[in-house]
Image 1 (cartoon, one colour):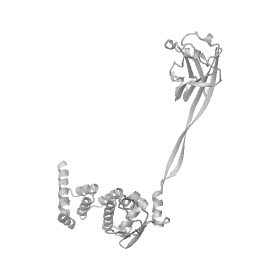
Image 2 (spheres, helix red, strand yellow):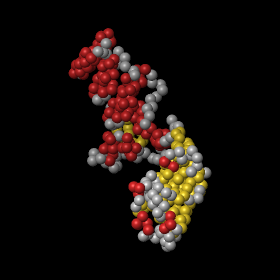
Image 3 (tube, helix red, strand yellow):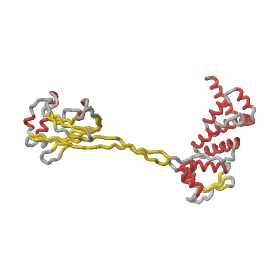
Image 4 (cartoon, one colour):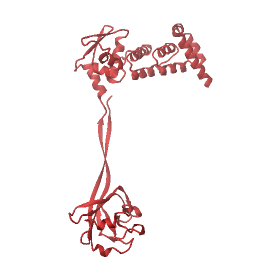
Length: 352
């Protein structure tokens, strides 16, 4: 049955602002001492106050050969999610070049995270003084701050895939004519080769492999299968769901599922085999467990086999099973299956 799911998108609003700090008389500022700085005027971005710090002689004695530049969050006790791009303006072209970029992070005014970048090596002094960023004793520092504001999450309802229902309609309505026809017990079924080949390796080999039927084959006859079983098989192929007629109850329903498991094995449809095994495991009883054990062995159904062994593990149930016709038939036709089951039961009892 079709339902719906939701798909959400997360987007972050941001506000960007820039400030240019113009410094004249650089030579007069130089020599003021390491750790000494000049600060720009305060500017606001995203509702928070910022400033630029310029250290002509470096941040401390370890950086005497560098100029140091920082952006600083000034707003008291503020915590801001932001990025920072510090740039120098080429005095000959008026264009700025990025020297340091700080990716989005949390700036906290109460500790050193209020500064960006977290390094004092903005630019070597010798390189700076020989660059076009310094002309006529003048320089300009540009600071671009981007503040990340509230995160918006939008939700969109997206219908769940309706492909199973659509393929089911394809099978029932025949809007697209069938290109393969089957005769099963005198009942004719139309289908589509491509759908069958996608779902079953056996059909794929039959229709498109080296052993494929001749192109002109109008009808394929399926032997040793009931029409109702083949109909349920086709329904599962197209819709990935099991459909068994409502008028089947009790033993008739179990028998139908047994036949469907055989068909699933015949056409190498593992999921359908698992579905059938689950149903049969839920319907084990004294009368049918021996038959189920033989079925599990014949069609390599480990889940069903283990369930049968578990069912007959107690001596009381084993005695009741041994009195059934199914057990007698299995003892005659498949004694090795019983031996294997008895060994498994003994192992279980030994472990407990």
